[in-house]
Every structure is written in C-alpha cells, then in structure tokens.
Length: 177
Image 1: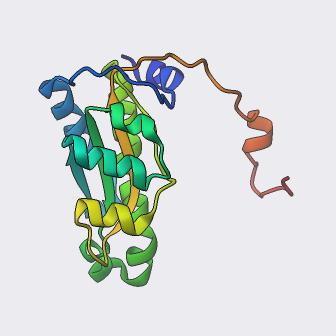
Image 2: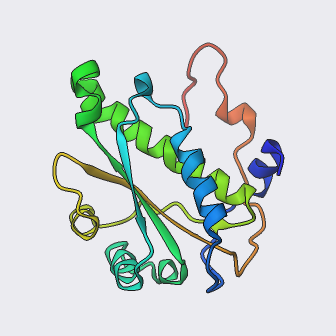
C-alpha cells in the first residue's frame, strides 16, 4: 500500500476476526518499529509482544474493560525506557524523549499494520500499574501505549477531521477553543 493510501485507510478498529496473523506480517511490523525515528537514535523504549490469551485478557481488563482487545491474536505494549537516554539528554530525556520515542514507535506499528491489511486501535486508557505488572515493566520503565493487532471484522468510515485552517498556525499560535 502506498504511504498516503495508508494514511487515508488507517482507522481505529475495535472489532477483530479471530484469525492468526502470519509470522511474516508480524515480523514486518516489528522491523518497521525498529526503523522508527527516536531522539539521538537511542530507541528509548521496549516493546512487549503478547500472544498469550490469558495475558491479553488481563490487558483488556487493565484497559478499563475494553473487551475488544481480547479478540486480537497479538497485542504490542510500548514501554518508555528512560535509562536508554537519560545519560545523553538528562531530565528531558527521562521524562519526555523516551515517551516520545515509544509513541512514535507505536504510530509506526499502527501504520505498518494498515499497510499489511491488518487493523489496530491505539489504547491509551489503562491502569498504568496493572499493565506494568502484567508485562513486567518495573520502574523507571513506564507503559506508553497498547496496540492490539488483528484482521478487521469491521471497516469503520473515516471520522471528521479539523480543517487545516483551524489546525495549522502560520508563524504564531492563535487563540484556540
């Protein structure tokens, strides 16, 4: 799929077919994640690949009962790792850059899944401590995002977006609502 087509086709899908994802496709997504830009190319994040049905069920519960997650054969959990860049960037690296790195990697995975005919839904609403415990992310590691990946069982239409005239500000930010 061409890049701008991926942008047009990407949706947050919350209904999945109970069908396994081919290993080649999963590997392509993981390689895409590894190519994601990061501060100083330090890749201050970790990715936990979850396929165990019970662990996926626990992630769904810890995500405020977003039960659709349970239908995904694969769930990726993106974890910010401040230890990978704090020596280079100090406090800003510890608190901002590692989280940016993790969320950029999640975005790349989201787009890669779309390009491969798969679907996903960015999960940001979850109990931080519960998810960290499920995936073994001990402090100072911090869970940034959860991304279930599956074949879609629905094809939602595009949602309205803000007009560029409201979103893009020439030179200075205007007062916004």
